[in-house]
Length: 139
Image (tube, rainbow, N blue to C red; front, side):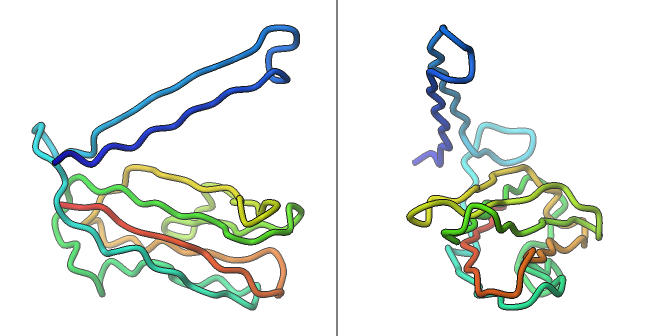
């Protein structure tokens, strides 16, 4: 059974007077093949209550050992749209995930070199508690 990620975007505001509807899908596959990625760390949650940068995923402490195909999903479940969580790889900021009304905050799904030894780090913009949801898909 395939693991598929789909994103759907629709807006009447982004293109002025022209409505936009866009969709894209991808099947999460192993490196160099069409075989389904079969492993996951499982969906987890982590509560952060300080602005200190912390490791969200430490690859040295997981079963992800091959430098092959991996994908990481991270979601900010916070409700304050003005607060965000910075996401880092090897201490380089790659983006910010803002909170959203009703817990519908920003999320990301991106490819990652699974066995590269680089940790995924996060740092909240404020010391009020925020919960991140995350999972790694790997081979």
